[in-house]
Image (cartoon, rainbow, N blue to C red; front, side, top):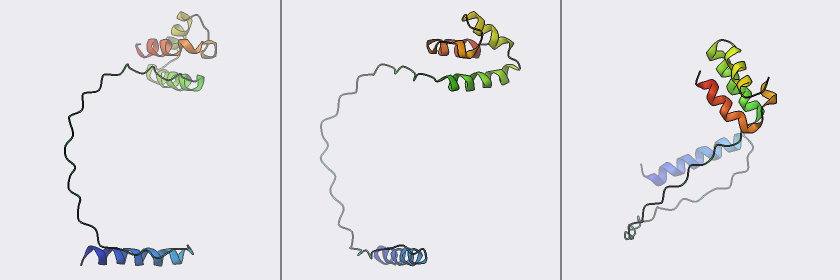
Length: 112
């Protein structure tokens, strides 16, 4: 069986499926594949790219820090260590944190 016959059978099967779903399908003609193209001549080697500066982490939302700290709460088995880190950052709760403090709090809690 040639590839053309296989493609024709696939097209026929797809048309039959589409007819069952009342989908408007236009017949497609299949032509023989052309001969493969010769590979392009190799070009001069490219210079290695200069290393880029590491990207800054994306800003977290209050919901994201809360999700991270809930996971840490489960890991630690209580909220006391998290409360201590929050107090060390001068706040009583997550909602009191400045967004610039989020990563510092997460790092401190994960180090526990």
